[in-house]
Amino acid sequence: MSEMDRRGFIKLAGLGGGIVFASSLGLNTMGSVLDYANGYAGKKVEKDFFFVQLSDTHWGFSGPKVNPDAEGTLKKAVQVVNSLEEQPDFIVFTGDLTHTTDDVQVRKDRMAQFKDIVAQLKVPTVHFMAGEHDASLDRGDAYQQFFGKLNYTFDHKGVHFIVLDNVSDPGAIVGESQLTWLKADLQQQKVNSRIVVLTHRPLFDLYPDWDWATRDGSAVIDALMPHKNVTVFYVHIHQSTIK
Image 1: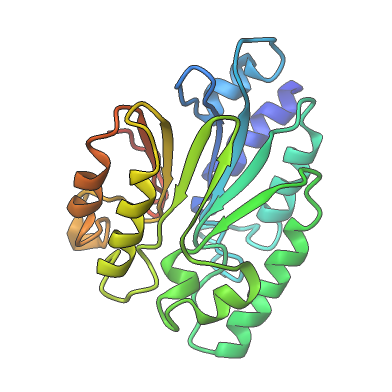
Image 2: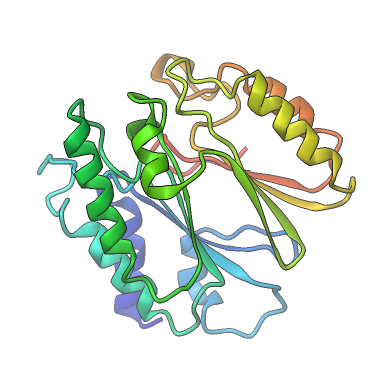
């Protein structure tokens, strides 16, 4: 990337709370956009693949003091990703695609607008995940109409990805049914399988008073513990933390 692209990519990560990661999994390492901008894109390193994570875009948000370019940030992010010299294997949007609204029709309009914008991405494979702004008011009904299942799995070059839903239940839980589904899926994975879990809220009690937690997250962590190579990506808090 050029210096201008690097600055722009980093700026997009902080504007309006959005989060951007360029993640490489070939050697079981995770890199933030800062690592990527500092030279990963232009070097031939021994990595199996990388993907771009975009999150908390909150399409439909309006608040000049927080993001003076709320209607432009997502479109600029699409342009920047499209301009990368080396395109990612895929892109994943990890929730709060749109900003919450009580108006069902406005909610659907925002999702349709968001989908039209991200359809301009050159990368052929884009995965989506709901955030509480997308799904908590109607238990994910509108979201599923536009983006599909709330929880699912996919595999890419030897890595097993698990998308968990801890937002559609207003109680901020994963729930027994999904826990059963998760355990059944994990039983199909070897102990040393490379596993990546994508979830909107953190699974641990980062700060429950601010809704930065999943009430039954410990049950998810317990289910994951027997596996030796697990990385969890969470978002929701509009800042970068590593645990």
